[in-house]
View: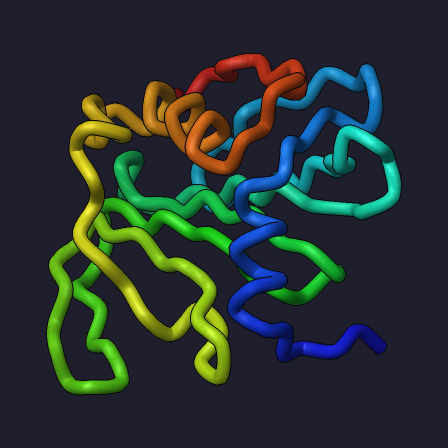
Length: 149
């Protein structure tokens, strides 16, 4: 089983690392209550990553995107259309918000979305491509918009 705690230095390196699609498959953006997991690789193909896309069951505008490594370590996550998040120090962060790996806490800390990086945060489809850019996914997987975009 993968070690669930990595150093902050390692996490920062993994977040900044260039990522590419692992295959030429075509993925469909999930409908209500759906989820798709897309494999990614580091440019040198030595490190595996995953891109998760999840949608809420009822609310079209609710969902999350996350970038994981070592199968279980969430490096970056965006939650949108949902409830606020309470950080370990008690601070409440409104939704949408961005989670970044923090050593000793994993993805338990959330931050306000940097609007300069996510100018269309209220459009889940546009936000997905901004998220992939934020995670340095330079060869993006092919994702079809589907019916419930």
